[in-house]
Length: 52
Image (cartoon, rainbow, N blue to C red; front, side):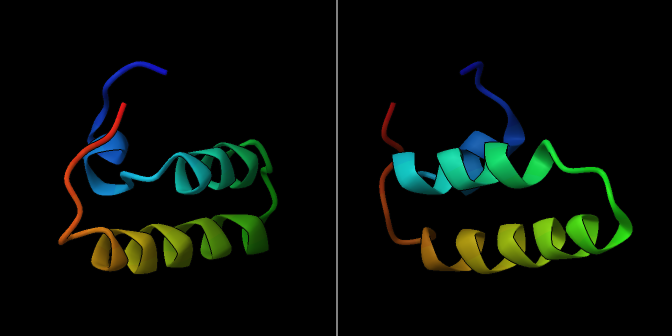
């Protein structure tokens, strides 16, 4: 997975996998859920060091 801004926000492997799953869906509600997920995951992963 290439380094992107998302990878610096979402640092856990399970979070990155969930991001990929949510990003692959294209409905309006899926986009809202993806935005909500990124917001919450970024806040939860703030104290973690980046893992690759």
